[in-house]
Length: 304
Image (cartoon, rainbow, N blue to C red):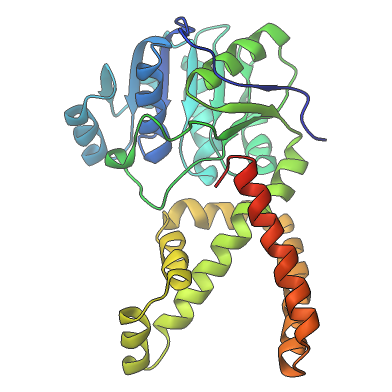
């Protein structure tokens, strides 16, 4: 199932939610707070994190009106609650905060896998809460509250997974997302996980593997690999510097789709290996020409 709607931000965005609560003040959580305040989309931002150091840092940075360490306290009276935590923690967090949320409030997440989040969160959702899973396709290799910035979502897709929620609630939520700078698109959870397995999860897995290979090289060669790193290897090290807990949870919770894409990648890699071994220049050039076209299409789509 692909998109049913796509929207972009409009100027002079009015306040959409009087109060929002963001649970988790890493890159995504902090950036959401900053973008919401930049766009004047909310009246009050409450941020929350279980890490006391993150709470203290967030208070000093000032991107929220208040920062607390108690998630149940954070969500009281919030019109929108955003769970910006690793996907493996979504279920327990939802079970904790849903009873404290006010009737009619919207609950969303920012997880990179959607089937596992639905599996873990659906059972604890009450009838008076609007549950709208989502995922911003934006990020950097940096993590923590200091990594946040107000323009992280500009021009980037933010996927919304349709649920049994009134359409006006969904439209209001999408207006908030476009106010952050995003382009919204509705997508089925299974389809989302397959797409992200190839476009995000597999590239991270490959990057982690290549950098791990470098780590295992003999000392002199490893030192020279680091010292003479070309742009390709530097790009892999940037990706491999991403939050290890977040990516551990992604691979465990999207294992089926990742393994499917990894198998296809392995088959294509074997084809390339044979072409190199037998000096089949035409096959190599044809492959590289096709892949260059993909890069051009990404640039044309404004997602480079």
